Length: 507
Image (cartoon, rainbow, N blue to C red; front, side, top):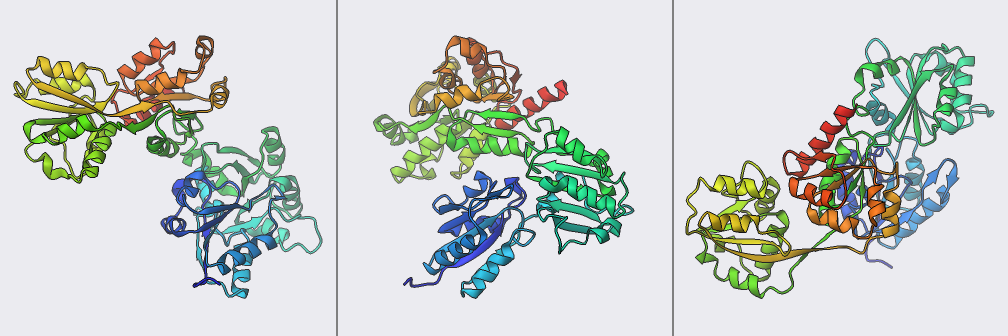
């Protein structure tokens, strides 16, 4: 028997967008031994429980992967074994999510539990489609109901006759399969045929798709549009507000599939920014960052830091590799006393901040030329510079500093390697219509991504090519690609801004 009884957290995962997951939900996942999760839970949410055992018990379109009684028994069994269990459910666990049934089963078994509410799709999905579910002068009440129940069966718990006359906004979850039956029944009980209706698929996600119509024609329009579950149905005059309040679906990057080629350890930042702008990031890392194993040369420089005037970093990777070795040698920032520290741009400066270091110098243009241009105004003649960098870094900055009279030592602290990627998956992704944009954040990402492709396959790439800076763009052009998007500011935010500007022009 376990020394302690386990506990179950019934957690709502929200409507789909991982940014709408609650902070308490994150805390529960971080402490979980086991996660029992539904269908369509984002991997970005599941990533908050990296070490937890995962059980998939999802249901979709009436197809039950695991029956509800089995789920109840699984939760009880895991808790009896002393496990901390997160039951992760789409939306809110108590709004048409059968969370109440699970809580009853846990209560009967004497299992302690907590409920962590989630943002329900009944409210969030209409909001992302530009529809407030209540609006003064249009609707002062909201009715949420399931569309999964057959509305023609005897003994239905839903009073369609009362709903048809209520004037309330109706939000119907799990109703796609019965959409025609639902509209027919509401019309039969007196709801006006011209009542506005919206059907929203994949709400709050970059794949969100909305069809609008009236009670009389929405079933036909949804069928013609190929609308499928999961979808939320909104019925009422508030649907008219969509014309003025549409915001999510008009983002410049909305629905765009964007290939992220950065190292897996760095892809998350770009991915989150893309999601925030309505894009759909597709990860395919073409590089991995690894610290140089042979550290003798770096160790020598670290033991003589007091002899230098400047420590200059040209990437966040260089910062991390440098301070990683410092930590291994049990050295801290005190050894940098008296040194001026330079960073090529804000991302590198933020990496320094993580180690308690504020850069003394950041150029106004985040390139090698920009780094050198501003230093021409400083007196660096005769000054000693140490540059920790990649093993394949070019000599632009090194030679530029020497021309300004500085004495420069450079040391390789990391190198980039090509991961063992799935070439077949990459070739499939590069087929016409699969991607809208391919992003490159360094020359290495270009070279490594294209390494397994033939010249013919490279020429057939139709996705827009977006590069973070001129050097990366030059590598892409040399490899046979046409660069469509070039960041004005050589940062991830600058790359996003350039993509948005490009698609605004196309709109």
